[in-house]
Length: 516
Ligand code: BG6
Image 1: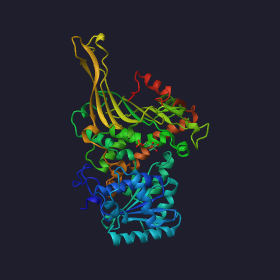
Image 2: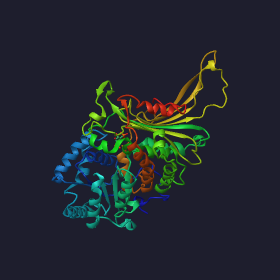
Image 3: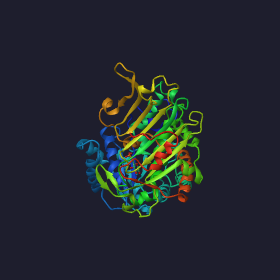
Image 4: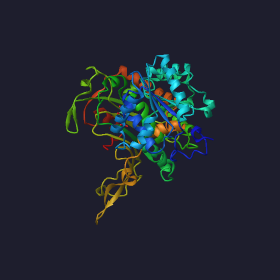
């Protein structure tokens, strides 16, 4: 069996840790003039080539409106790769083989002739480079363009039957947003599934490509000492933080429609939550892992109705303040944002996972822009000791905290109490630290490298499945609806840790947010 077509349950697939070269294929990027292509996709594909994970016969076809020759496309991409690749300078030998596989088709997405030209180009690549009818279509375009592209691909005979992958596979990669609420998410899904089979669809959530998110699976399921304490028996509460210090970075118009909840909570944060809280899968493959993840999202207790939403959620919007000591404008002063915007740039929620493992354990979730620092982490706060053995004068016994830092300063830290050396019994919290950088050296591959490779290999473990997306929207949508009726988001100063109400949310339970 060709490892490239293997997916779930194949014993030949030795898990995600094995280094595997992708089978030769043509990657067609729709929206090839965009920012994602320039900053992420082309540098990632080039780095796969440097790592010898991209088959030498592979090809990349840019598809976009602007007229351009293959040669111009190559030159343009070389400049982009030189600027954005994690490896510098460009390796000329690798680049010349890589560039020979770069092609360009100029067409609008609506013009059926463009797809005929695309088909001709792909067939020529099959003959000349040996791409074996393997195609990956990367839709780096707004969701409103998906429908027309999918329809034309089908009409041009560019979608192969998933049952006959040995004759060449067809896969489609899409980027979030996967809709804006439950109804639009469903409509988008139906549109996709009317042309492709679920196993051909790869929904990118770049957080799943992060090494530290993958390591969370290894930490939990390749060690025996953590799992027994990973539950309501020992965990008092969990905090998940996705904090950014940057603002909306010129994307005001987009952000105004999205807000933090759609931008990062519905996807990145819930993905982290589901991996942190899931049961052990029966195997390390796409279906088994995603079966367990989706159960977590389905078990999230609904937060719906004005009263619950007001009690369990907090929204904020940044106003002027300082970042890195420099004054920064308010969200409402960003380009493309109306002055009276009600869009949240911060959100905090108190969630419960109503299942056997987590019954009664609050999960406090927060995400936001223009916060004091950039940090993504999961922190498990353990229950206090059952009995106060040490006198109050010895110092307060603080509960253990296990924090898993997704970024930056990737690592894992356990906080525990220690005796301060000396004749008196004085207690102080100390930490045991594991740091990726110190142990494994420099930065590993970028998320997009990993995810593009997995797409070519046909392994969807690190991609969102349609039922996960649906479950996430089912949980989020009632909050979005209630917020329309509730007060606007509370102001918080740029460079702070968010609105006061977020602190009050935890204070009411006798807790406090970490200041990581
Ligand atoms: C993106 C959001 O999905 O994730 C951005 O659209 C956000 O608003 C980004 O800044 C964060 O990604 P990372 O990898 O920098 O944490």
